[in-house]
Structure formats: structure tokens, C-alpha cells
Length: 476
Ligand SMILES: Nc1ncnc2c1ncn2[C@@H]1O[C@H](COP(=O)(O)OP(=O)(O)OP(=O)(O)O)[C@@H](O)[C@H]1O
Image (tube, rainbow, N blue to C red):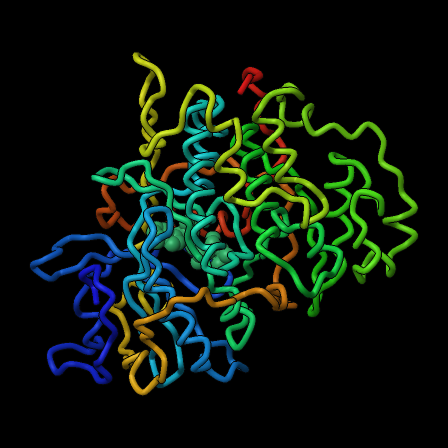
């Protein structure tokens, strides 16, 4: 572990030289870089000679109080995620389990940027749109990673800008990495959202079939999310910014559907015949079926000419009927990717000679939160570690020749009852707290980073009022 290899952990105890478990001693922990629904993400650097200083993101999933630990099935699935070698999929370098409380640690290759920050930087700092080459390159690589996952029967189910990472300086500069894939199943059970951190689960990228209560769904849910993200890259604003209904079990998200219908028009049984089978379609006849939405026009919202290849691709991603929605493989072949500017591997280089390089900020690092997740400046508390694969039959299938259906059926992630409601007042524009090179920050700056990460959690897609007007319309 820690060298970028896929070796599994074998140590259970703590070494005598430190109260840290042995696997953790392979790293210098730098600080917290993020907080998701299920845990915290830390930046660490490898100490081993072979890969000294290599940055790693360690995602710690905390066991909920009433959970029963991570099931062997979930662990087997996670271990399989280590075997996904694709340039546009973030590499899971290792998995650790703390057997004492069944906390789970996943270590990934570190990416300096993500689409959430890139969009926010353009919207709040630069006040201009993302160039056509960058949008196209980001989208192509996202689709390329997704196509690989889908052809291996892995559905992401939670695609959003913060899950789409982009590599910083180095050999892979500007390369997109899809993150957080294949974890939906372990999120579902037994891991539950942390009740105390008050984070929200965004529904802005959720496909209409899920919003209408579909129990069985396909990779088309990811393509809907890609459409939403594509539109957000163009306009710097979330496309469908509904207010989430909070409830314990999969509530009916009327406002989110309403936002979608306003832009795309009302879905009809003619265009989407299986609509009638979806539970909420019948449950909420008065609201959904009764309300007519006039003047729907996606092209006005995204400022694209209706005949442009970009608009054609976007509208195919936002097709209501999941069976008609464009697939990742089809999208990669779309005309949009064959016209100038052509996409490239480094999405962050300027597209035209003389164009200014955009220096995206590095991730803020909060050095005041220790590995146990408490805000303090104490050293990390001890945890025991063990071999996640040890004794687990099938943890390393060497001859996996057929794609495994991983997340074809399942429940949606559910927000915890105690989660705070969306704060729809403006939280955009919080800046600063950046940490060039990820060097540990001064306490003041670290506190700022902590605050920024906290605010970011409440603002999953930056859908706040006060967006700058579109700088110019595009034709691509
Ligand atoms: N491999 C990585 N390298 C760098 N940053 C990462 C990596 N993985 C995740 N992050 C960042 O850590 C932060 C938290 O990620 P995490 O996946 O826990 O939450 P999220 O995706 O924001 O929300 P949720 O867990 O609710 O889906 C995000 O800003 C994300 O971009």
C-alpha cells in the first residue's frame, strides 16, 4: 500500500514505534481536503523510497452508530474496484479495514482539481466561460471513463462535478478521472450518512426515472448526470437546481422534477411509454400530470443554437426515456467530438496560441482535523488495521472475464433525517484558503480551508443565486 500498487493490507496491529497502524505509517498525513456524505477525505504523501512524496487521497468511511459493519460482499466489491485500470478512472490504490469498528479506508491517487472547483473558479473568480476546447476535452474524457465503467457493468449513480477529478501538474496534467464509482452499493448498506456532519445529498443530477421512483435502472442514469454536467460546464450554473425534500425513505422530489419539466417540457406517454409504470407518476397525478409547462427551451437556457452539434448531443443526453437516451459509447462517436476544436488529453491547456493559461487553485487543506475526524490539533488517534482481503474468498479474482453487474439494482442514497435543509442563500464566492502545493497551512489559513470545505458541502452544485451573466454565446 502506498506505493501506488494494489497490494492489500496484511497488518492488523500497531507498530511499537507509534500509535498509528502500520499501513498508515507509510504516509505523511497532510490534512483534510474534503468531506462527503459518508466520511472525510485526507491528503497524504507516501514515504517509501520508490514513490516518495506521491500524493494520495485517503477516504475514510466512518461506521454509523447503528450500522453493522462493512459486509464481506461489500468488501469484495470494493477490492474489485482496485482492478479497474483506465486512464479516466481514478485509481484505488488500496483498501483498509479497521476491524475494531469496521471503519473503511480507501486510498486513491490524488487529483488536484475537480469540476466543482473549475466551474466555481470561472464563475466567481474569472467571470468568464470555460473555453470550448476545455469543455470538449473534459466531456470526452468523462465519457471515455464512463464508457469503460459501463462496459464493465459498473453504474456510478452519483455523478456530479465534485466526483469528476482533474489531475494537476505532472505527466497527467489536465487528465480527467471519474471518482466515487461503484461505491453506491456500500453506501446503501451498511454505511449510512453521518448524522452529525449536516451534509446534504444533491439531487440536481438525478435522472427523472429515479425521481419518479424507478426501482430498477440502468447506466442511463449516469448519462443524464453527464448531460447536467455538460450544461453546467457551458453556463457555469447547475441546470436543474431543485430543492430537496428531506425524509427517511426515498421521498417524492417534486421540486426537482418541476425544474426539469420547466426546461425540457412535460414528458408524455407517447415519448416515454414506460412512464406509466413509475410509482410517483401515479402517486402525484395532481402535481405532475396536471401541470402543463409551456415555453420549455433547453437551448435558451444553455445558450446554444438548436442546430449545433453541442446542442444535439446535450439534448440526447437529456432524453426522458432512459431506453432512448444516448449511451457513453454513442456519445463518444457524436459529431460534436469530430468538429473543431478537437478534444485533447490535457484539458487544461489553452486552446489557441496566445490564449492565457488558467491557473486553477489547488485544494485547500485543513490541517486542524486529525485522521479521526475531530477538529483538533492533536496527533492522530490510534486505529487498528487489518487485511481487507484476508480470509475473504474471491477478494482477488484473477480471471474475471465476464463483466459483473454491480449496481444494476438498488436503492438510492438517502439523506439522514437530521440533515440540514438546503441553504439557498448565497454561499458562493467564498474564496481564499488555498494551499499552493498542498503544503501544511498556518492555523488561520487552515481554519479557512476547514470553513471552505464545510461551505462546499452545503453547496454541492453551486446553485446559488447571483451568477454572472453569460459572457458570450458559443457556437460549438
Ligand atoms: N482522489 C481524490 N483526489 C483528490 N480529491 C479527492 C479525491 N477523491 C475525492 N476528493 C475530493 O474530496 C472531497 C470529498 O469527496 P467525497 O467523495 O467524500 O464527497 P463528495 O463527492 O463531495 O460528496 P458525497 O460523498 O456526498 O458524494 C471532494 O471535494 C472531492 O473532489
